[in-house]
Amino acid sequence: MTKPPISKKVLSDKLWSTVQSSDKTAIQKKVEQFMSGEDVLLDQHLFAFDIQASKVHAQGLQRIDILSHAELEQITVSLDDLLYQFKKGLFVLDQSFEDGHSAIEYFLTEQLGDLGKKIHTGRSRNDQVAVATRLYCKQALLDLKQINVQIAQVCLTQAEQHKDSIMPGYTHIQRAVVSSWGLWFASFAESFCDNSQLAQQTLDWIDANPLGTAAGYGVNLELDRDFTTEALGFARMQVNPMYVQNSRGKFELQVLMAFKQAMLDIRRLAWDLSLFTSAEFNLVKLPDLFSTGSSIMPNKRNPDTVELMRAHYAKLVGVYNEIESLLSLPSGYQRDLQNTKAPLINGITESLLCLALVPELLSGVDICHANCEKAIEPAMFATDKAIELAREGVPFRQAYQQLKDNYQDLAQRSPLQALRDRVSPGACANLKLSEMADRLENV
Image (cartoon, rainbow, N blue to C red; front, side, top):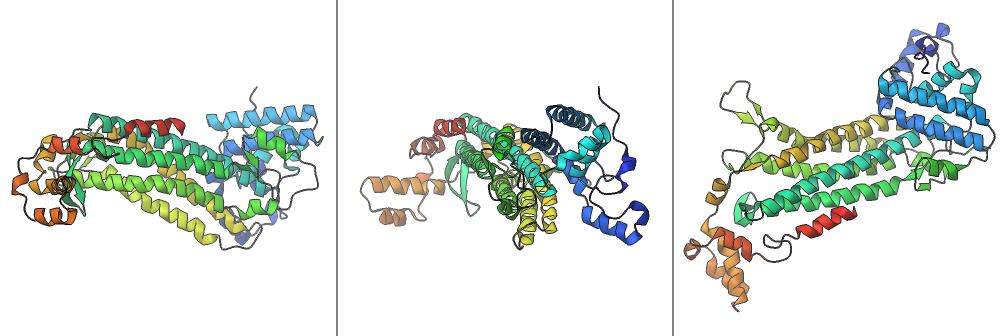
């Protein structure tokens, strides 16, 4: 049976404080507020993982006889109760706690008395936050991989549907050659294939268990770290306790780098759509859901959602640089590392929100086929004609000069035939969509 939520009256003193609340000065309270900041609110994202790691740590303590079977059972039931209350909103992780780690210990102590105080045996807040963060990052990378796959699949579907849809191809934002929407969609399909693979590779790279390294020097207990590694679903143990602390921030940067690659592609995609929806291009229309009206001009609908997607990469660069900038530190744990939490969580959370909109956006893009075909000019066939002459034996540079500014004979060419003649691997008539689909299956 679920017990009542934890009483907040016990939380005025920190677990590790040497000063009782009645003795604290105003400045001391300000110091505590400064040191904790928004830490406990950020821990809402990590709390379930922290509880999971606490359960496994308790199991490990029982394996070396620090806890009895009965004590382990009581702690496990209590932690399951805490997770239930947290998910149902009955237990609120707010600023009455210093952080999520102390909230777990307080909850156990409130429910189990002195038995609850045993949970911290053999671990530090240092490895506690490291393991919760690592589990959080693993889930984030799985989410990133999945949304990358979904975006790639939508792009493959659209590429197949529009493989013969005429599109002007641009270089330097100037009309260059006849192209297709199939090629455009396929370009993003392949990029998000790459992004999904990178997310998996990054997950493999960070998939190491820091639990059991304590404050960075190990403990004088024979902790069964192989057991906790397997129980928490890690691929391997992160062996050296000092490196666990030295890798704080380093692993977070690599996780954000995987997100940066995806968001870099979103920025380019958003730029394209911003241009193509303008009256000057007028090649596509966005779903109404992704545009908004002007506050003053009745004639306007603005691609606001796409513009915010375009802007998001800059925010991700900002949080990446914030973490990178604070990592000028000596070996061992330094409290500076607390400040990696906010940029990591904010970067991941906001990126996933952005990426989740992309499949619906791309599925709903309405191509203005007539305008696309009108944009095709005779000069855009010149490259194809030059290659045809080269195939007939004319030196390519001679063919190039022959066609330069001499496009009159190309006016009758068919854009659709130009697409069907473009047979090199990956080109309009040979998109290799099945190969990309196979890559996604393998990821």
